[in-house]
Image (tube, rainbow, N blue to C red; front, top):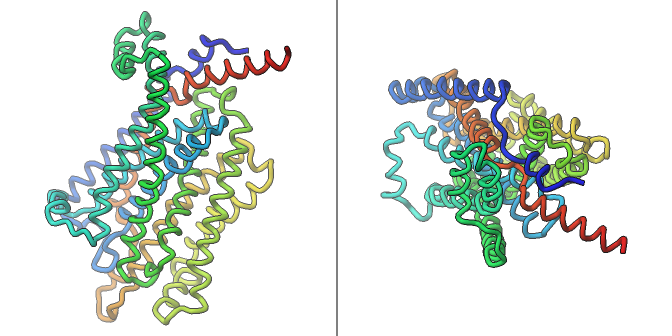
Length: 439
């Protein structure tokens, strides 16, 4: 049986090793290269990108939508599992909260990167129009960032108090840092009640905000009346896709953290089995909405929309479309239906497939539609007819992904990724139940 001291020793934040340092330096280098590319883009203008009059969004908006979708894991996994008091959630929720925070922060930064004139960001507030989804996007993203940070921070308070005591002699500065974050936590009954109530309120708040975030994101597309986006199905389609991207990212990161921090005793095959079932459900729901989005229009589509569908099914984007559908959605469903497919190693591969598929899926949603405008395309420059990101766009995009990983890395370094106090409480409750059963 594990003692309190053993649990604290296992779950406390640990210093970076050589491998962790190399990883962190690599991320910083990628970010700096992306920063140089972005500065050059600001100086030279959007000419360094391959975005033109038709493909005016490109990879930046695809990346933005991916980050927004991934942040949805904070709503689905964290809030719902907290509110339903599922005991198996304990080792998973904090990692999900960290992913959510990193993803939504980078979503906000990415949308600013897409602006050719970021100095005009203030205009979004000064000249805001309530009927525009962009205005509501500007409001909802900072709101979601704040709530996500609170949902990460409040459950951490008891753990900060434990770490303050643990590091008091060995690392006084670190102890002082955790002490400030602990907010004079003593573990009294009144404090526990207040903390539980606060977490519950925040968890309830983040669900409608998360749904609104995905819905507004969908409205940014569907209110443009473009072929491929002009759909009343787009909001639930985006929400179901975000469910898949978020859970896929959670599975992948949990596997990596479990292996790196040797947490096999806390994150077990049982947890991967549960996550596998959750991911299978997410993929099945998303498959249903994909059928509604792409198959049904085949029977009712007008000429313009039929050309768009042919581009996806058999045209220039068909390889990418079928790859993200089969490899990123159908194969995971088939594998996850079997118990052996929900083992950690298999789950990691499936999680990677889902995350990569989810990222490219956003590219498929954005780009082909922009290349099929309502205006006649005859007589326009050849460069307008096609789009693939330039080197500048790739470097900047990789930098945003690296920044998300860096945020996660720093959080994993200084925060206990598995709740210490709750793990101790559950161990004590389990021991008490065993004693009562024996007696």
